[in-house]
Length: 133
Image (cartoon, rainbow, N blue to C red; front, side, top):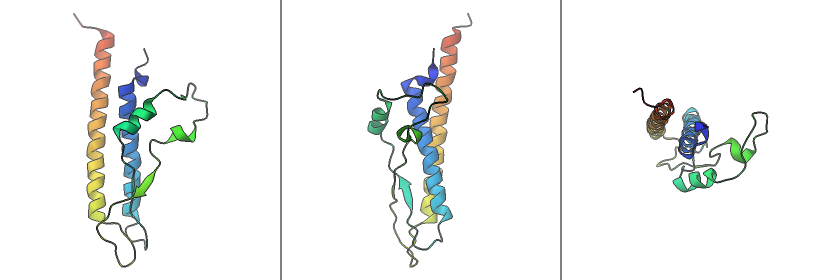
């Protein structure tokens, strides 16, 4: 039984990959907080509808040596202009406090999803072993 391909675990893995990618974008924003004319960015939201479209039947990698198409390489490579409340005279729109709150929120979301993934793995182990009685 291949538990790695279940749609629920696949959805959780996609969500964790999205959150990882979002952390990288937010870190880039913080790193460029003093760069003139830098505009804060964020990822387009991870929606349930998009996840269901991605989970549909389509191409899949059946061998580790296959080339992964660009459409399958990233969860959500689309970055969008982040909502900001102020722009500095230098043209920089990064609000470090706001970015750090988003970093914290993203980390908490990641921890929740990772915990769910771990619980599912534990339940599958129990189911595959059967009862101890």
